[in-house]
Length: 396
Picture 1: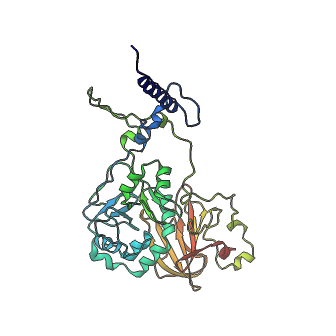
Picture 2: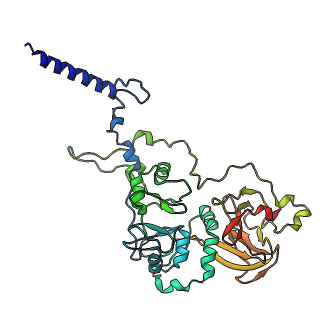
C-alpha cells in the first residue's frame, strides 16, 4: 500500500517526536540514558514519597478544645476565637497563654489553629478560675519559659492527668519555630507533608509561621511507619501501597534544626573546681560545681546547663528572696530568686526544694537538689527583668 506524501510526512514526524519523547523519558537527572526506564516513575508515577509522608488525622479535642498528651497539652481555636477567648474558655490567664505562644492576647486565630499550654489544665477547668492566677505566676511563666523547655526536653514523661479526651497512638513531636524557619523547611526536616503540617496546626493559606510558635508534627500513618497489612484485597479492588524498600533502612543521622541543636563547643572548664580567691568576690557563685555542658546563646538557650551528679545540693547564686516556685508541664520544679540588684536567677531541672515562696535566702544556701537524668544537670539563668543575660560575667 502506498501512502500519500503528506501522510508519509505526518507519520514520519510523529515517529520522530515519539522517539524523542521516549529518549527524554529514559534520561536520568544527571543526563545518563535510562535504557530500561526503571526510573520512569520520577516523571509522576512514583508514589513512594507519598507513602512515606502519609499522616493520620489530628485527634479531636475535648469539649473545651483541648488535646492532652502525657507531656503537653494544646488548645484548638474555633472560628472567631482570639487568644483571650481561648484562655477564658480553658481557664488560663490570657497574658500567660499569649506570651508562651509568642503572640498578642488580642490576636485573632484561624479556625483549627493550636496554642500550646504553658502548664497542664485539669479536667473541668473553666473561665471561673482564670482570674485566680496572680501576676507573679504570669511573670514567672514568661521568665522561666526557656527553662521549662529545657527541663521538658530532658525528663521522662510525667503521669497523664485525667482529662476528658485521651488521644490514642504515638505522641506527636512538638517543635518550637526558630527565626528563619518556614513550614516547608520544618516539613522537610521531619519528612512530613507540608499540607498535613498545616492541617494539624491550623496554619493560614500562605503557610506562614512565626518565631516562637509551637507546632505539632503530624504522626505518620501505619502504612508510612511500615506496619504490616493484615488483610488482602480482592482482585480488581486495588491493593494497599507497600512501604517503599528504600524506607526499610534508616537514613543517616541528620543534624536537627538550628532551633533545637546544642551549640558545638569544646569541653568546658569546670568553673566550680577552678575558683580562686578572687572568684569569691564575684557577684554570684556557681549553683553547683561542674562543667558547663551547654553555654548561653541568646534566644536559643537563655542560660547555662551545668553538669552535676543527681542529688547534689543546689546553692543560691546570691542572696535574695524566693520570688516563685512553679512547675513545668511535666511537674518538674522551677525556682526563681529575686535579688536586691534587680536581677532574677532561675534554677530548673531540680528536685527537693528546701525553701518556700517569700523566704529570704543567703548566698550559698542550699535551695534544692539536682534532678536525676541522662545527663543530670542544673539549668541556670540570670535575668535583667524579662531579658536574659549571660551568667558567666556574674560568676567569674
